[in-house]
Amino acid sequence: MNMVTTAKAEAARKYIARGFPVMPLCWPGQDQCCGCGRGHQGKQIGKVPLTEHGSKDATLTQEGVNEYWGKWPDANVAIVIPEGYFVLDVDADRGGHESLDILQERHAKLPKTMSVITGGNGIHLWFKADGIRNTTAFAGFSGLDVRGIGGYVVAPPSIHRNGGEYAWIDESPIAEAPEWLIKLCANNHRGGAPVPKTKENWITQAMQGVNEGQRDDVCTRLAGYYLTKIPPDIVREVLYPFADRCTPPLPHTDVDKYVDSVSRKERTKGEDPNTGDKDIYHYCPPTEPAISERYKSVTESVTNLTDGQEPMKSLQSQGIENVTKEQPSVTESLSKRIEDWVKDSSGWFSYDDIDKEFGLHADNDKLNRRVIIKRLKDSGIVEQHIKNNKLYRYINTSVRLIDFKSGNKVTPIQLKYPFGIEYYFNTYPGNIIVVAGSPDAGKTAFLLNLIKMNQYDFSIYYQSSEMGKTNSKIVC
Ligand SMILES: [Zn+2]
Image 1 (cartoon, rainbow, N blue to C red):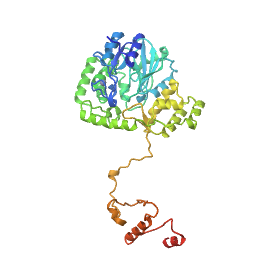
Image 2: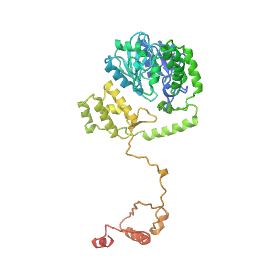
Image 3: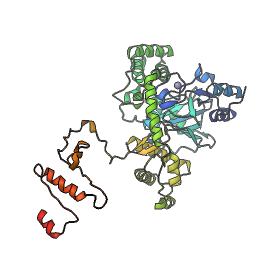
Image 4: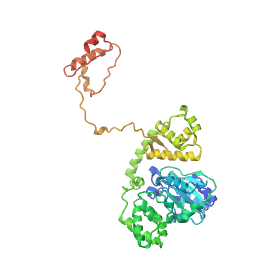
């Protein structure tokens, strides 16, 4: 078999060389939709295993890598977490960064360890410890999950469905997990920390497991909740840990049964008004060629319009470079400066443009910059290119969209012109008509005739630069 040499296959090879089993995942294709052709939606895109038995099909061999990435060259790369390790998964969209800050304030700063910035602006922190299981809402915190035994993480250089690339931010050796972290993993289900007040509180609490009398009811309700967001096969995976945590544990076959029955009853309706989950709004039509073709042509024309434009004007001449050197790593001021720069920009820009402008080299600065742009995007200050997700631009709110279709109908003014030229154009209120011509072409005669033809229908004010003070006095 030939050696597959795509970036993803090479990365997979690097991982197996270090003893990390890998498996191929769905990848995001055109227009942020499922690229693997199986019609994945929302959070599934770029994350679902392509092999039949998921992580059981993970490989540690060259042949395996060649087979998988030979078959699916674009497949995202997953690392199946080997025994003795776990990953703390910080999900930016669910407030994971804030949760991580609070967690570290309460306990201690986490040690330097191998870590990845996810394409969705989250972080994966790798730790060593035995026997750690998968958990969601780690220590009761929203946006913090633990991937342990049997779990997997999407690894660099995979692409997130939003276009972001997973990247190593720290390739240090994997640190031993601190005692307090291991303890929290073990105690997770008994809930050491207060649960953050969110509308998903009951979910977080329920996911920690319930007693025998409530198991079936809660399982059904959880299935109903998750089925509005993710497809049934993933819901099952999400609910197995819940089932394990119940006293006594609920059999997985029961979970399957409830998920199937709820999903038959409540087919996803396309949106969740309670949570406003955007993933559900971004619906990818896999079997509608007419619609997707039309969509494609629109996005292509956008791309064409922006091709060849200067991505950004340089601000280096205005001393930004000096400012950077004086205050190298203050996040808050970086945030303010990036925001100011963005607001002063025109056209599309990428992370690279920002890094160049602000001299960002450190991984930490690059992470901050990504979070800053995410915040600007969330608050409607910048928008992402519809097709090239690496490009952003400032939404200039001083430019208003004009809804001309709903404007009032205006009747032209019935002004008469010499030679009857009013038949060739309309004159509207507020128009300025310029009469231009070479010297002695008859411009003054034209205007005087214009006055003569209209003087009984309109008030006329005539002022000419050729008029002397006497003439001016007559007309004023
Ligand atoms: Zn897919």
